[in-house]
Image (cartoon, rainbow, N blue to C red; front, side, top):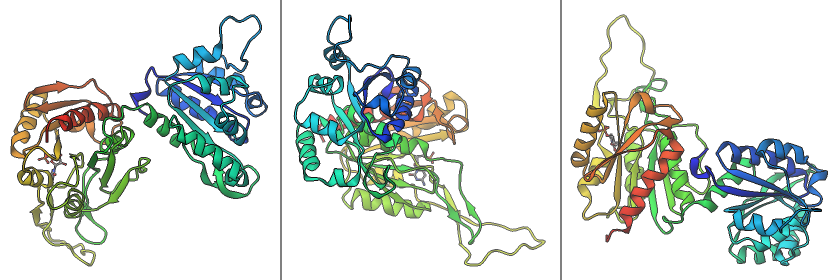
Length: 407
Ligand code: C5P
């Protein structure tokens, strides 16, 4: 989960649908990521889920009344003013109809009508209700108003046991949509190519050379770049990580596969992408020959001939004319701080890149958190240690800033 939600004020509106139980998980994910969550119930929400559960998870009482007896002020005005995002989970057909009609007949509808922040709705209903022209008309109105973004529904089993389009998006996807709605939109119209994960160099059908890279850093960068509006091509070495929403993923195996995929994504003239972020741990060597049959064990020592792989990033750096694409390299070293920085500085020039993200192998590989320094020709900027998802944004800040400079 990402710190992009830390301290963000989210109004979580829950309406009356069986899918409402999943809103508890959404609340939990938001709170874990540091968001301040104020839950709102429609009148029928409490027939499906308990206010006490949400109060326990979010640390705030659930609000459901527009005019609570004895309470001062207008809750819908206050919540709308304070919220940076309104999430509607689930959004029933009835609630969507009320919102499309501009109704303010309960606390949820009135807050939505009063709010100026983005609104993300996760519809959930029987597929027949979703497909009905009235619902579709309401959705056109809502999304046409530009402030309402939809996440889902997805195709799958609905409460009645039937299958179809109407099942609510899963909590992870809803939180990803929330993140996208809150993100700065400074990479809209940009195409970023991001590589991630290890490469695998086959020795024979069962043996290979590889490294400990998990791919988490590159996947986090891809997800945040997408949230900030970029078109993202993620070229991934073998990793079980799920593809971030909205990202185009190309799976590769060896360094040579990765080089070919990067070449296609950047285009022959390197003008098909605005930036290349090489977060992959590309294997430096491959076996000189790959055997079709499994090598048999013998009593003799086995010498494995290794051929250097091409340096993908350095080749792009050497071919680049001018300042596009912006090039981001990584330097993972098993050395002391000063040595790591010295290596990173050297890579700025040897690979002709704009920034090198320097880190220690012991901090980086396979971990969720990392400690990195951004090394540019202007100096070194140590980022606060934290989750890889948190480190993605400062790296992308550099890319976004660089892209604003005249090309
Ligand atoms: O030289 P070193 O392997 O430390 O450089 C790391 C950087 O270069 C990373 O950004 C990595 O993705 C990239 N690289 C590459 N092709 C290679 C080896 C590394 O693009 N064969």
